[in-house]
Image 1 (spheres, rainbow, N blue to C red):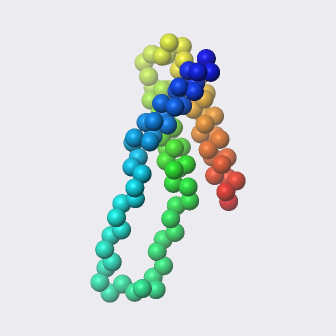
Image 2 (tube, rainbow, N blue to C red):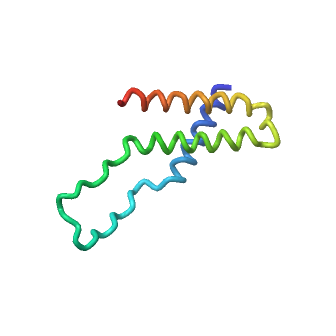
Image 3 (cartoon, rainbow, N blue to C red):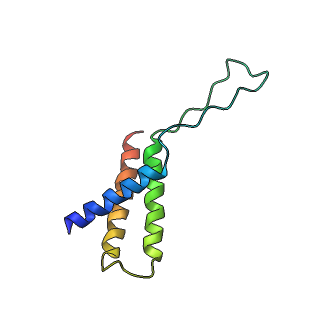
Length: 96
């Protein structure tokens, strides 16, 4: 049973890794007349964690709306997904 849970999260991690590109997009060219003293917007803190939460919430929605129970593992997968989301949100709280 543990190996199935580990396999489930490993699959989610692989999907997450392949879904979101690792590189950042190129910065847009500066507008004419822009001053050098303008402060750029602060980057989002921990974008990977926010993306993981969004990905897990999306996976949870699909699991919840599925027509079958995946051999009896859907409920456990939903609980594990909820726990993973909860833990990631706690991580973000400790960073403040």
